[in-house]
Length: 415
Image (tube, rainbow, N blue to C red; front, side, top):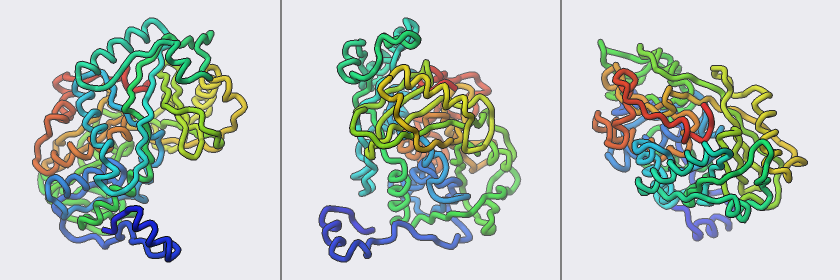
């Protein structure tokens, strides 16, 4: 694998940057693999990478129906944080954040991870009690979090209307180590690192069915033929329910559209991430100057990568009331992702009723921030056949035993 550095940049500049190495191959599928991962988004590619790096398993195929990173990885608002309420979630997301902090160096690819901090606003006394509870829980779990007063918020974000009639800002929680990353770079960097280890990334290859011998999975039937494997992992986000049905079992998840939009480029203005769960609106500013704005999920279920206009309208109303300075800013584009939401707003990283078939889904609106940690623990689960301590609580059977992990309040977006 060609090493990226200032020296390679200077060397390639002498040849008009025409001699850079191809990031990944487009291989013909082999007949047999040790592991097949269905889904070449961030989570799937991260799983393949840690299978190779941590567990030494490189006879792996990552199969993608469309193009690499073309699903939710390319359709989100790129926020990274770990300030979740319950111990199980906090530990998993904190593992993710620690991996984020060293990811660029680890895969030798700039993922543009910017730790500019994440602020969660409180608009009522009930919100403030929840902020105090969560910050206390975060600190007990070793997660950095502090409470900001309205005065401190005004100093950090002077253009915010603190004394708002409908949405008064009474305080906020703040995680300094949170921030944003470049979503495309994450997918490309993981794909490049996987390819360097000999892992096959097979694009434009739809999984039509799962091959089974009794109650044991033996491979997949695809548009490029049958591909056999000792183990199969499903990492298909909003389409996880469809994949599970093909395998012969049901998942307790619903798929909803989740919308986001960006503005025309502005001069640097927002130097942190500002979230408001109560009004379903959050905003940050990209390196290109665009305001990246996220909304709440649409109430209807579906697989369309779009959303309803009333959600955008509600979000724009909230944004304009909180930040009157943005009223004359024009929006450039809008998109939607498909979020798979479990009843307790927590993921499922687990074995399934089919032997040697594993699934990683149900991330809802928290998928991107967990990319690194999700791949790390799912790789362990695939390699050993048993969950890691960090994902043991996120098993599929918790919906039978009743040991749910209710993270609705800390999810940042109402589900």
